[in-house]
Image (tube, rainbow, N blue to C red; front, side, top):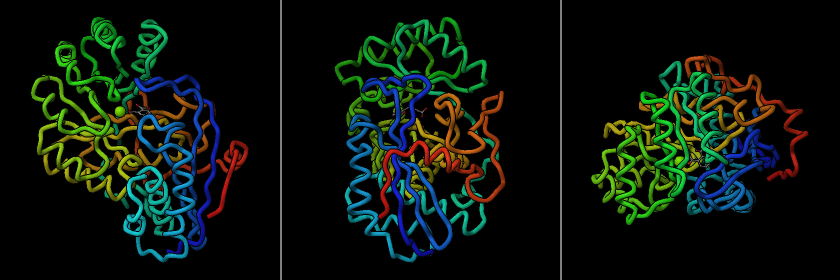
Length: 367
Ligand code: OSB
Ligand code: MG
């Protein structure tokens, strides 16, 4: 597989509803799509970097520049036997995992098409149906949040995750539990708390949560390892896990009992699979996180979620929760019992809407 060229595109897409976390509110996405051109096959992927350096230091403009100036030059003109070889070619660049993941995943997409294999099988997936949850942002009022939860439960989603921060946490969780004592419920702090909040965090134990995601600093493992034994609630790490080695450290130190895998955060499918396998060996359940993706990134999350240790419902939900019109066909749809059945067709099973992509593109560059 020769990498002949790489195309970068920025699309602008308004979200149907704003998405707010402890680090801020997003109302519209700047989406970076990457296309690799390999001997008649086009592989596509989405870079999950956000609009600003808030979830991580990466954001769309650093990803774009890092791909154009360093990562694409390391790949263009090279012959690869398999997409996984791209990781080594890009390893000279430190970090910038979301930029690397976009390129590597586009190559996996190309490899699946070239081999006429379903991407999920190429990744080593085994599950023919995946289970879905939703991530619900901080709202303007408690009532608005309760209404959203009602809607998502009625749609069949198997797990509700709410975003929390100081001032939007215990009271909200208490209200939800009063109305729905038995649902699978979790929360995500996106690093909003500190170790001195221990007594406050202990109160989360009253709500029988499936997990609390990333309570402390985004780059911390050690303080989480001191917090976890103090709580009944399982800690799940998201931001802190940048690669398999971080997970090894977190597991050995007892910093969490669950890990969220985001393929962009860990630098691509190769590392995501290695991380998945490590967690499976240590009996740490994983689930697939989301980054407000369009259908391109979402289809890749669906494929990854078929690996056997994805044992908890992921933040992999229907296109129509985010977009008036998604850029793939069919859109990602979730069944009435909160699952996505997996298609046994070559590639991702979702076609690109190239006309719509062209209309939404605000800048593009060939590398
Ligand atoms: O922490 O999981 C997170 C969105 C943007 C940045 C970080 C996170 C999220 C989500 C949304 O929770 C998940 C989704 O629905 O895509
Ligand atoms: Mg998270």
